[in-house]
Length: 185
Image (cartoon, rainbow, N blue to C red; front, side):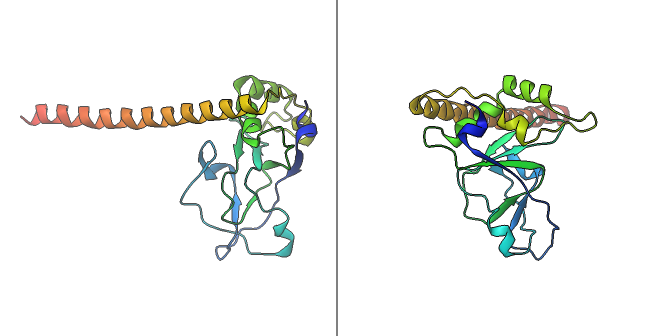
């Protein structure tokens, strides 16, 4: 199925930041990992009635529409803070019941899908995709139970990678301390 048959696609918005704002304005650098927002992000938009329809909801998917590092998709897992996506994103929402939004994000983030999107992207200075390119993307849709398993396995793989990185840092510190003690002895 094409993404446009599975979910609605809209663009993020372009707004002026304000340090007194109370609404979070998501940019590409606000994600520190897959589906993980930087804990230090600060709200930067002033409330207005026009913003409310752009608030991100749990299970929305934001897809980076411009950039050198691919067109990464993130699932919004928490909507306890009022957030809107900046214009660098496209927002997928109102996904049909037979498809998990997290599965769509996983599928978009596959290397083969990223290569396909890069092939269709426009621009030489800054590769970009538009709503049509993303909407025309074919997504293979397995049963809901298989989608749930894929999402769970993907989350476990990401957790493993994070733990491996932490373990490597600890081993480096341990080795440095051990060698430093040898030098000082």
